[in-house]
Image 1 (cartoon, chains in turn green, yellow, purple, cyan):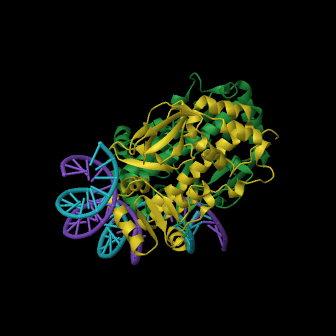
Image 2: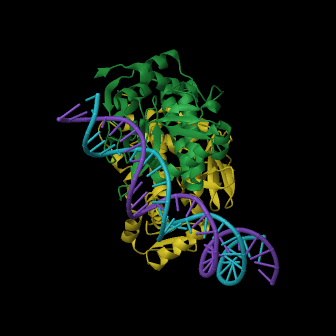
Image 3: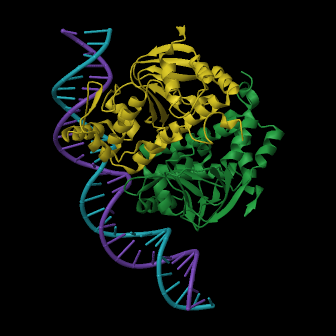
Length: 258
Length: 258
DNA sequence: CGGGTGATTGATACCCATCAATAGTGGTGG
DNA sequence: CCACCACTATTGATGGGTATCAATCACCCG
């Protein structure tokens, strides 16, 4: 079970590089991350609210969601993660968690000990910066979700999810934005969107009937990306590292200067 | 205008200490933060989406909100900040922002240059840890908001906001949880809750009629805290540093060990 | 004292939830 | 390999929580 299965780590480092410059040495350090490899079937809880964890969860294959649970037992998914994501990176600095993690599909994950990550941060300020920044991007995505759940109608909300997920898939090198695998259930999407599965189903039908996007057999196919973006009022700026790329006074070991 | 007005900085450091142990030296460094003091009237934008900022905003007095703006112009408030909060701490690592900041009341703020903060982080891993952790607490609050906007009815949603804000006020040493100033408008609360101001007004009336809480003259008075918590299904664990206090293997300069 | 913003209330419409039932799909064991 | 069974997707009917449109009142600041 132990192993330095690099597939997932590779993707993670690749994503970090989209927002932060890292030296060869730092990249090598990050690629050296290891963890216990675990496989789980769909719809299983990996971490429960109230737990204290000492590892972070890196997705190698499949989908994982972070959720918050209401007293009634109803769940709201606050984030959906794809391969290459380090789901609960923030648990490194806040190991007592108020949320949980659940699988959305059959998954393969890597449990990376917090100690390893902390050691890297201690050894390299750039890595600390990159990881901190990664958690802020995670928060940006959540903020955007909040604004859509609070303000957008179901059609726009779901369209936005398809846009966002498509771009993330593409950036991760997993698929094309207009055609990507999505193995979660309609019920899970409902929990992410703040909608009932019934209404999800009807809205998906509306999107299909309009010829915009089809989601069948665990596969999303966008037939009219422009129209999807219009319906979603989509602007990818909020989670792209684009504007955080090499620029004076921000990147790399700037933390060490003043 | 320049000044080392410490009132706000004091509160900020005080809050950091609730979740992280910091040495006397680190505390002194943080207290040495300075910035340009600015005053603004209510309902004014401090930062607009798409801007690149080189300072962080520390609230000395008044309320500030972070918002996301839809294409229609409608705004969703993704966070509400009180005195002592460093609103956009995450902008230190991601200075190109996708959101904006607006005042909710007349405010006095301090604009603290990113450079100053980065220098502190470079000089002390503990400070880096404390600040990173602070942004994760911010994210926890947002996640909780998301789950309530997505899953809870208006009454519960608003009750939860009153609980959360009361506890935060109390922790900040600004007021009692059951009686605190809240100078924002009902419209602004609507933007935070994902509800129209009309519905906010009616729900407030319902809370008043039940004898649970009264919000008048910019002042919240909770008459029945237990009932309010029940209505809100409130559990403060998600943003308290409580469980992050001194504990082996987590705090202080642990970042520097392995 | 005037003007504008915020609060309050009423009437109506609509989006989405809920309840209920059937069809389809994939996984599992015999 | 097939049959079963649980889970998932789909559709209909109905109700409810909020939004929307509209108007009046209260209040604060200049």
